Image (cartoon, rainbow over all chains, first blue to last red):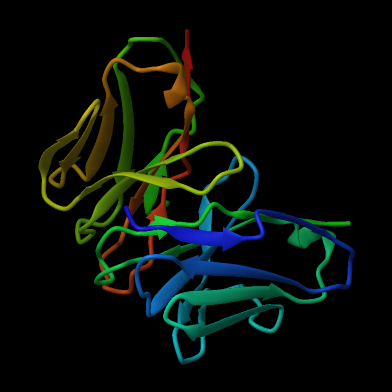
Length: 116
Length: 112
């Protein structure tokens, strides 16, 4: 299957600082990528749709000023958690599709964020 | 009612058993269905991708879709301890946005 790489795999930061997470499609181009959040023992919740060359589309209840998404190229999307707080501690996962929007979605390995 | 319902388990079986994992969904317009396996602290790994009603087989895994009942299943034959993970069903829903709707995930433990 297609490869989606996410970096870093884990990060610890202090409250009030910002953290950037990168999502790369390694062997295909992706005009659309998706960012999910997962709390322990819970399923994945979609946060936003990242669109190459345009603004991201956020799901209801997700603060766009707190979770900044940039999709600057066809192989890279970044999620920046700004002014992080302990309640932002979670597992963040990105996904992308090599083809049409209803084809298989491949996920990155996830980033575990801990805010202390 | 959740759009996709999945029993979280946990489900514990002996090695070699046949495992049946199931999900139901609420909207008959949902089209594409996937099964993902997720190991602890890792991203989901795509196992099966289906569209039409019926069975799709890949090695020890069989995905089954029954659109009349809005029911999807994943069967694992000859289960192995390495199959111990959380299994997530997902659907692309009824729109062509690329978003996925996930079930809660079922935690499976295969005991040697």
